Length: 379
Image 1: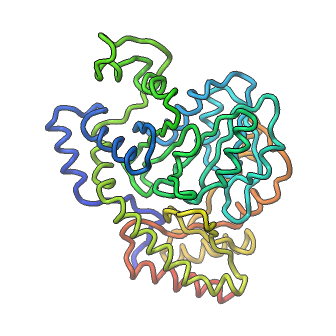
Image 2: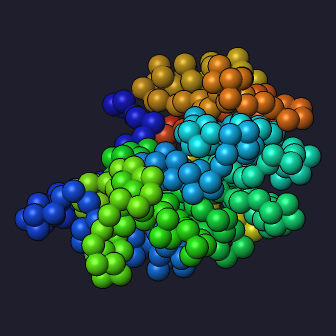
Image 3: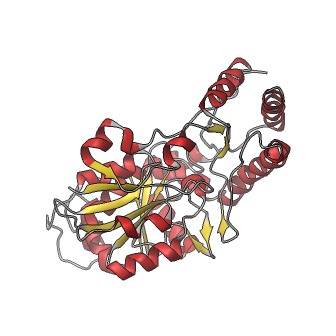
């Protein structure tokens, strides 16, 4: 068997055709036909108030944090088990980070730990929908309303996922998607911000367009565009948007293909779970997930490392995931952990992700399954 990568970026086959069309339209700098197609598709599909493509998922988070209008000393509650981009956005905005523990079932922020972390400086709750599985949003939104806090959904891994019939990214004040090459749909580097409160739409457009009211000008709402507030360049290239549009046209095909692989993995490894050799992902009844990743939890760190090495020797790349942010040098510098780290670090040490991507072959999938079964049945 040739080497099986952990991830292969999605490719449909019409991407270059659309990129060529963008070039022929003499519009490659962004906010052209394909950018608008992507924005409108997401607004309609997800019943979102407003969606704006960005240069990355990190940029979408940066915009969300800046739109929250945080002041020095303000605090943001978030899980420690996430990527640095989640935290960087709020550091950029001048806030202090307050990390809380995760749930052992979904790996999401433990909603029962949030309220005890709230102080008179708390302004935002940032949730991360890990592996495309929803946080307990009803409880989180209730806490936010009780304390007059904003909610940012880091839905980088969660496009197409749902919670109680609502798409993730559309429940909090802001939602953030990623279209990085490791995500279900990709434009190489890219993302989108979902704005769920119309009060923030004009401000978001200005922030995204270098502080100008250019978007309003193009809609005929102002006679000329001008520099009206702070902004930055968060608008992606039209070439990237054209690449993404090819995949959004086939979103259900991609989503169903990934779900097929996820379900086959789960059924194949169920006996190992029953024998308590591994733990498998948990999908609450209120959630519809998008098969962003398939992970297993080993008994301990040493078993995980041995499994990763074993699969590497079989030409299969399996990888661990986040090192908890609160234990990282920047995490110590910019924040603190509230309460007890009961699960964040211990589960981080045991979790390993298997190859999961659109178009993985049945032969490759079975090879991964066979070798995984061989390893765990041999210990």
